[in-house]
Image 1 (tube, rainbow, N blue to C red):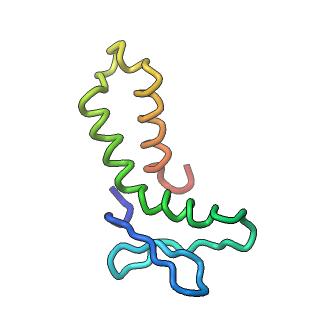
Image 2 (image 1 turned 90 degrees about the vertical axis):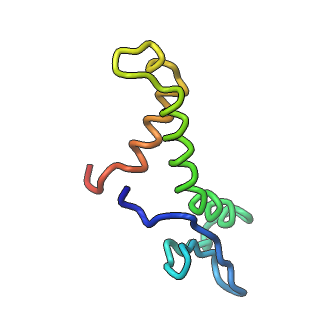
Length: 94
């Protein structure tokens, strides 16, 4: 795991766009200049949930995923979980 550990939370100070934090460390500041109303907050919630979502996917695969060659590996939910984890953990430049 190379990302900043969770939990991540949202801080939205008056007259500022939402920010995602891990304790005292800022993770992301969202720019809402070109978004639809409510979209910035929804994006902040999704970003803040990312560490929990990855953990849930890994737990799901540990319980229900198969080994290479196992027919369960062809199930759409297993394929989608593996793709989402790979997308989140892909190193820069790949």
